[in-house]
Image (tube, rainbow, N blue to C red; front, side):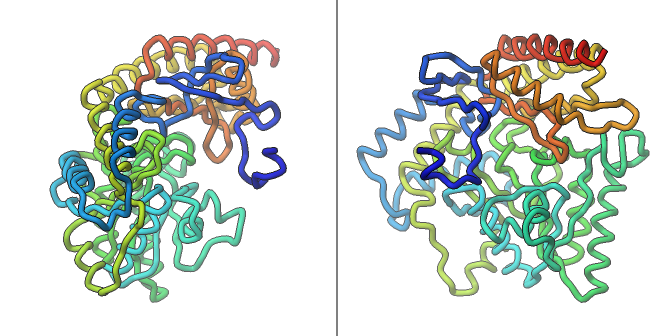
Length: 428
């Protein structure tokens, strides 16, 4: 039935031998035979699958009311207020939508209306959503489709392991920021003006990249001087995933504030809700057109009840602290394995956003794509679901529900140790 009715481009995990999941709880998935899988993939189910507090609030509000967000209701304003308490003070205007793609599309509209410019700068390998407007600013997608538009400018991904400027560079943040400055200058010479710089606060599709500290500040300075705005895409990594901070962009320093922040995925723990936060100035420019903006379901009472419940769970169960503790522990385990197994080239991450970069050779750092595929397959056989990312599909990525435990981390490390040992023995 799947092959008959669902578009072939909608790929399954483990497409050669797919897993049929029937229920889930916390960080675990259960298949049709009742077998339990440890979930290292579902960053959407942020506070854990089927969390009782989230389910309760959703059910109660659904029984009472769920209607068009253009009626007055307490939930939407209370939720906006709660979100504002997690953000820098000037980000105090909110638009609610249904998906991260919708949020990034609106961010693009806001930036263009505010600046009266069109062009956008993005990072190489970036992915910002599946709407046409966002495919156009996602090198991860457009390079396999219609190619790069004239109004899109692609800056090098600040990957200090395999990028243009690496860990030995004396000022890697400045070097990568200067690449953005060159794009701005070249655009200006060609009569083009920058509306926005879009960046995932921690690039995921690019390979679980941790950006060099200070990069965003320098880029923002250049972009704003050119009349543009800075958009931080938090769709993957917001809501405490990085552990130390509630938002990924805060890793760049407390003094840095984007002009627009987009949210999705974890915001609703699997329920479709998204948000854009911006400044009064940008919001005023958007409303000054006289063209009404509304989203029928964005910000509806049920969605906002769920959003509030997610915030409560993050706080009450100390999930930021858990992300820091478990993430640091897993990073240590992976770095210990790196010393033992040459196939591991780099271990990078923050909180429960971690990438293990597999390589063929330590000198060339060529991606070990087949080895990564084998690791994912073998983990699945051991009832652990994990996936890969990065341009070479060689980066094992850990983005589990935030209730992931020390015992879970230990189990994954033990299984990977055995897998990498077997891979090494095959090569001998």
